[in-house]
Length: 247
Image 1 (cartoon, one colour):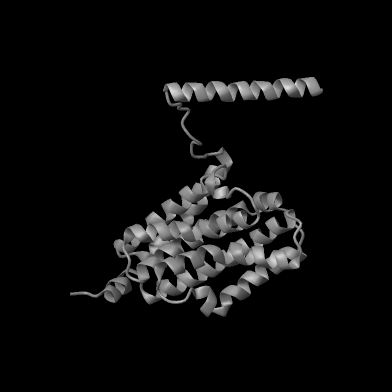
Image 2: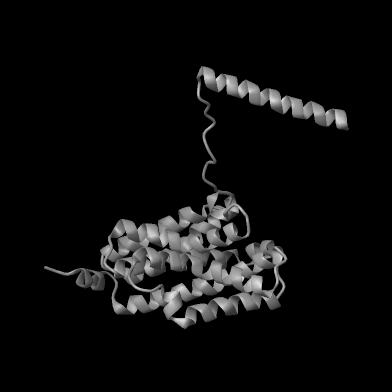
């Protein structure tokens, strides 16, 4: 009967694990740069650049590694990760570009980063012997976790929660394709296909303004709900009148 290690070795060969590591580092560098751009927009100092860059670059991977419970997070054992994150943040500090300019000029790289991390997260989850559902979930978390932590630290609503061109949706689709290819016995094809899908899907979403719905226009029909709506409406009307009188 095959063991967990045998199954993970058959799904993710050693060569693909090495490719996964380089994809992980590419995502760290790119998101540390983006974190630096956000830090510049927020008017932070050098220390702020480094902190935001490291959180942005390493946050998603560290969340993944902690949830996997398969040893110390790789960012704390492989010094290349911290070095790359610091380097990305330092480049952003010395080269002036804003967050909006970054998104306009390097949106293709941003799309590729989703692919890098979703593929890396899914493959790493499979390599420790977990199944397809954890691999899809942790692939998505790896791709969006760092940016979400960065936004929370800076007191902003995480961009992943809406209005950002299907960011998490793209990561979910890429992770699913990666896992499917691994189970079909072609993990390297999954790496290439995942990154390609991220580029096409994300760029199309940004270009055409695709977003998930923000919520259904539904209201509870009850006596209590009606009273509450009337009171809120009266308060809003009172505020409008007071503003008009001040003018």
